[in-house]
Amino acid sequence: MKTNIGLFLAKRARLDPDRIGFIFEDQELSFRAMNARANRAAHAFLGLGVAPGDRVGLLLANSLEFLDCFFGLAKIGAIVVPLNWRLTSPELAFIANEAGIRALAYGVEYANTVDALRGLLAPITYVAVGEAAASDQGYATLAALASDAEPEPVGDGADPLVIMFTSGTTGKPKGAVLSHDNLFYDSCTVSHSTDWRWGDRVLIALPLFHIGALIYAVINAHVGATTVLMKAFDPAGFLRTLQDRRINSFLAVPAMLHFMLQVPRIQDTDLSSVRWALCGTAPVPVPLIQAWTRFGIAIQQVYGLTECTGGAAVLSAERALDKIGSTGLPMFHTDIRVVDLNDKDTPPGEVGEIIIRGPHVMREYWNDPRATADTLIDGWLYTGDLGRLDEDGYLYVVERKKDLVISGGENIYPAEVESVLTEMPQFAEVAVIGIPDPAWGEVVCAVGRLKEGQTLTLEQVVAHCTGKLGKYKIPKKLILSEHPLSRNPTGKLLKRLLREKYAAASTQ
Image 1: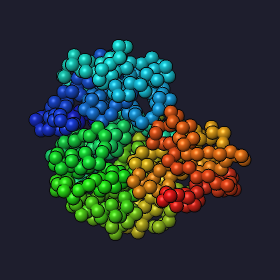
Image 2 (image 1 turned 90 degrees about the vertical axis):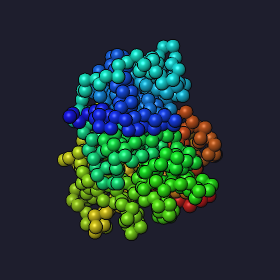
Image 3 (image 1 turned 45 degrees about the vertical axis):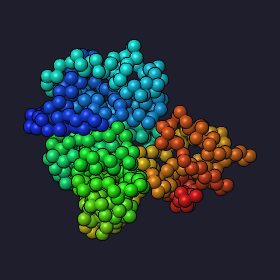
């Protein structure tokens, strides 16, 4: 059998044809029915002229159609480019042009965004999920007319399958190229390091344009678990789904765990079916772990990056309290080291750069050989994250990649926001940092010094950023300083000192 991720669904459909494999809202589909849908998607794209190696953008909310397209395109050797629907049209246009997409499948709820994109992209084929514009193809019609026969599989192993664009530290997004093998081995490394079981029901509410959510659907097909998919997260609806669908495990970020605990009468929800949850993007506060433990749910912390297909280290529920602050041990098919500036392993407790090796590490950055050479060295992924290992080999992340801000599970790079803020004539200088927030983990904060005689409000900052940045990237707080911002002798902003100085602003 080829290591083609689309064939994972086909193989599972042969092994468990009549078992419910996918649930979305009121729809329940067997593995056989879902594989037939993916085959129709494959033939529909083939009919549009999509060839092996062509890139196809998916601007889709969580839906069965997203999974149809993903598995179907995988079967025919196309490369999937999941697009973050929270981005603005100019941000999406940069990614689409950088990837050179051949076609774009989009949900009609994003029709206005797509209309703004049309003049920014080279001619491509537009496929609408929902009522299509006159000039676009309608996905429902294409799929209805397409064959559900298994297409001739194309692409496997090291062939690229997904380009996941991550916000660039200089404001320029980079596309992590993930192969069929990368997703296969990440499926193995995550499922072999956690309590994943055949027949489980696994709930996904995070957006499928994140690798952490998308790989869950792959693992479920690989293992034989049922994917229960929500279009979007809402605390009460998530809890209701955990109860009504008898969910066994779920994927979360700390903000989700926090918001669910605020739902009135949560104690009346029957959560007895849920054994565990995987929680990533930021350390999980101990009180949250303890609160969910009282419901009988083990919270396992995970560390990973898009560049390693999502999974690298995991902390077992049993060690969550005695290894407070740790993100755990390397997963099954993963090696992790912490090295100094000379690439020598640091002693236990000493901080260095976290590097990762494993068959799930990306191939390269798309069309960016310099960034690839700086990141992939002698088989190791240099994360840019600072961390330390303790005497038992448990990993502690000390500083996140290039001052990354993680708000509600979304990655936000300050340089991208700063490039927009520096357009404002009021600022003499400005820096963007993340400051603690009890609900979101962190929120974006602009720290600035104004030019003499200038005034500025947060409302003005928000107005300036609207339309230029995704809403979740826009600063939620503004702090004005009368003194120059902290810098090192070479002029580099010392954001660590800014965060320490202004952390109290999170309580104001």
